[in-house]
Image (tube, rainbow, N blue to C red; front, side, top):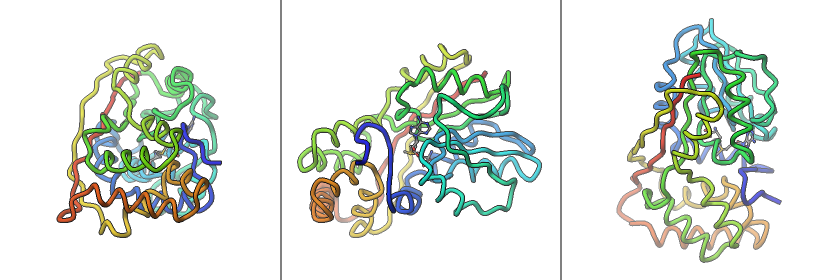
Length: 265
Ligand SMILES: C[S@@+](CC[C@H](N)C(=O)[O-])C[C@H]1O[C@@H](n2cnc3c(N)ncnc32)[C@H](O)[C@@H]1O
């Protein structure tokens, strides 16, 4: 069963995640890496790395003398991360590990990045305490989480369709992808980080043609998986149809807002 409250993809969904989620993540990954002030030779952890968008961007900044690691609890996501790693920069060490129990020495990293992962940690305090442990003194932390659901017409259309045609658990799970900044900043403070700050980033993102994209993207997130498990491909298709009816048909460009949270160890 897909996990309705966490973010656990199974089967071929991680491959689809890499393909369909890439356009949504791209500008935020650039902003995330910029915020961490990476430099050639930096040691960087991509926490909850998924299929490795931020790890690959960090490797390009850290260069051949740097060291980049990616940790995620889902081995299926890591298989795609390994397959997509271009091996042009430092090798990226992808490891299966939960955020609250990382297999790295104390102060191992100059920077820890976390792109759209923190909202899914079952114990945020334990995860950030462990993150603080592996970040060197004065090292950087940068994370993004989706801000308010209502800020994005695309996400709102997805949510309304899931709420109407999916299960209550799937709709509740979907809402967990959106996180108030102060939940993250206060947990960072408790974990021993300082200079915590946050700001919203909004990008207008042009999605591929919606006829394919809406269904493909839905099938690449856990709440789409729960639809398929409950009602088969037909359930996915009918929710995707509903999403499209809630979107304008003269554009594929939509605003997306994430909160960028930064801190210093
Ligand atoms: C929305 S995906 C984001 C993946 C990736 N960071 C990106 O930018 O696409 C959330 C990721 O968090 C991972 N995750 C959830 N809970 C976790 C935990 N406790 N420890 C490590 N990873 C976790 C999931 O397996 C999933 O890959």
